[in-house]
Length: 337
Image (cartoon, rainbow, N blue to C red; front, top):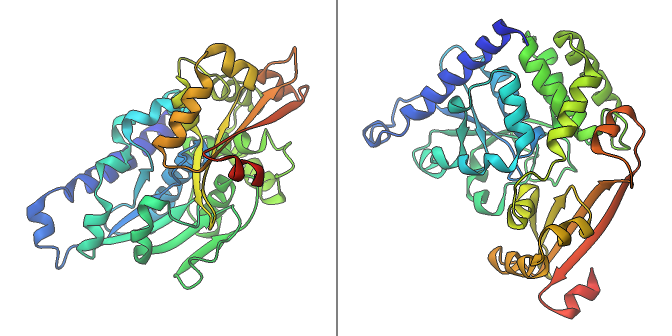
């Protein structure tokens, strides 16, 4: 770990946090005229490693080109829910990133900033706002994303959407494109997200932009990539002490279709593992369906072949198994899935 890089990133995050806190004052917002815009970089609602890292790095990249206040990276989850993402906690801790300097979505009032005409929103790792954030649409000024383009932001000032393995790859490219020098800690953060999203560049979703970004980030960092990925696997694919409800929320997305509201949860364990660790698994799933106001919940499980562990993934010696567990409010909807 580079102490200078860690110090530089923490210094940026501390200043971004202070800038965010300055907008909490009612007096400040009541005299919003003349105040500079609040540039916020927002990851997606699943708040996985790619989303969190992309928000931090993209905000740092944008800020390097701004003469006044820093862009604010916002983690799109409550601070209390960060424990659902142990790989992010582990990575930030390993790299010396101070968690108290991160800004979470429950710590900044984005609708209020928009109301006062102060919000400029930059999206990373998604190009369609979450159901609870769609009212922020008019404040979006930029998008960097690796998912399929949903066509929501074709007329904004900056839009870079390219299907690939990781949004972090596109963010890494922005540093080069904008002539911003990346420090080793930011490079390590981006590399971690790229490796995690592409299974160390072995996943079918991996594209040349991912390989190029990983190579540049790795060269900037200078560490042992294989051992680094083993560490990521060890933490990312652990169930830890999370409850079934927390596992469902850990990597969750909700989509509204004409016929139904459908939720998708990805869990790194087999259905057999899930039911054996929680005898109430079916009833918990039913409760989650009601809690999230869903018509259908699709649980996508992923786990290593028998006799292998997730750390074997770093050696390229493990086959990945997948299952679908689908719950619905009605048999008719279930038959449509």
